Amino acid sequence: MPTVLICDDVSELRALVRRALKDEPDIEVIGEAGDGQQAVEMASNLRPDVILLDVSMPVKDGLTALTEIRANCPESKIIMFTALNEALAREPAERRGADAYVGKGALLTELAESIRSVTTDP
Image 1 (cartoon, one colour):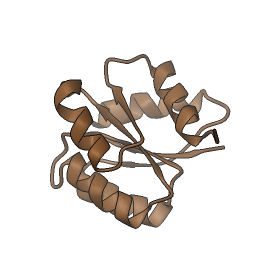
Image 2 (spheres, one colour; image 1 turned 90 degrees about the horizontal axis):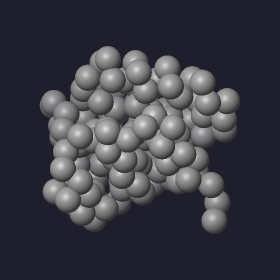
Image 3 (cartoon, helix red, strand yellow; image 1 turned 60 degrees about the vertical axis):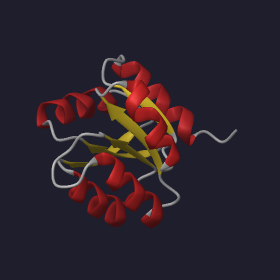
Image 4 (tube, helix red, strand yellow; image 1 turned 180 degrees about the vertical axis):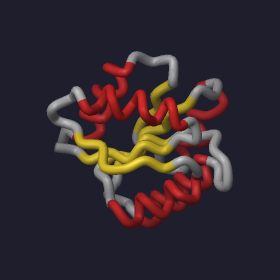
């Protein structure tokens, strides 16, 4: 069962994602971070299988956090989860090591499928 860390600065969105993933019997949410620095620290401490990481966050933006998380937790899969224009955010995220990209406009079921996809061995 993959473990997930939700990183987004909007607490209501984190709660919504947590509730949606709680209904998935094969996914476990183990933590939440409200800014990029907290995301880096929690990823290092918790070592989740998957990190849902927003691009636009306070203290440290998601792309900077992505670089640090990738260096500290190379085994974690990172899904960028953002409302930013995909054309602007996807390429920099992929260059920095993101494993997948899901827009916040996607259905929550798509988010669960992305988590399964990045944690399934080919």
